[in-house]
Length: 424
Image (cartoon, rainbow, N blue to C red):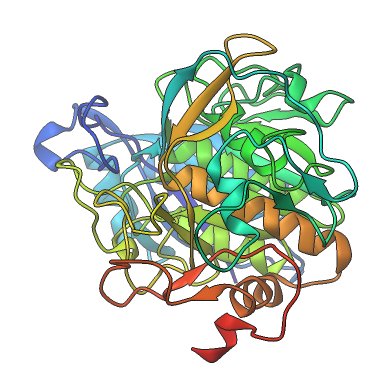
């Protein structure tokens, strides 16, 4: 049996509200909505469902229940999106092949940008040591304790040979942080075509450079693959994000890690997709989220993709190793990492810089650390990668980590005998 998903769209909440975006209530729906359902497909020949097979089954169901086919997903989850009315939705509910129905929803990037002036000259690291530091984040992650020493050490390499898939607003691939053809526009999930090499918001560029920028990045030798699923306003729909995950699952080849620096309502088909993606050997990091509409951190297990057990979920810390009040927390958090005022590439020009604040900044740092590990151990599974990062993390240094949070701070410095994370 293969799950088939029909994705629904409805009106969304105000995109200017802070915190994880939530889908609309039934009262907000327009007369014609898009519905989501999980259906099981039984293939006669018993082979894996292909795009053609999913399309064929979608057309069969639409012929029975109505609706207009929009998109087909066949790699991470065998699914299709379809435009339906409320009456057609009821008809789908009655079909024994339908497992569930979920409204389309809006997800929001988990970081805010602030322009930076006078950043000076970006200088690459030499001999595994970087003395010219763009911000405190790189300085913090290579040492166990404060105070900062003004040096970033890279004893484990720079992630060369690893692909970092950034599912975001696009990436300005021509930025000097990616000189040497180290960033590519891989796919535009909104337009459903090759693309993603530009960025009208900036969040994707900022996240990519924190993970793999020549000056600002953790994995300075990794290659960025931009997969655009979010618009200029920093929001993306379930339909578009599913297209991004499906494309990555079908095309990722070799050691890879996916950066998901966004947050939104839990309980969607996306959860199933991410589970299937890791089952095919592709690891991913996820932002814990930046709190509710009032700016107060909430339980990260209440958001997607942070809630997924297959995710390496990341919360943020400030310069004093304290979790900011806005950073989500809880049982689903695997690691903390610096997430306030992290200097990184901007999207306005090839030499512009911004400061990114949010759990997305912290997530990108962990993505970079994951790439460094994968370069040294390319056969590492997603579970083993999570274990490797948490095993060496610094224990019990995060102040006010939050209820049930694992108090583990990202560590990328020289190997020692403490293996702090193993002590938990």
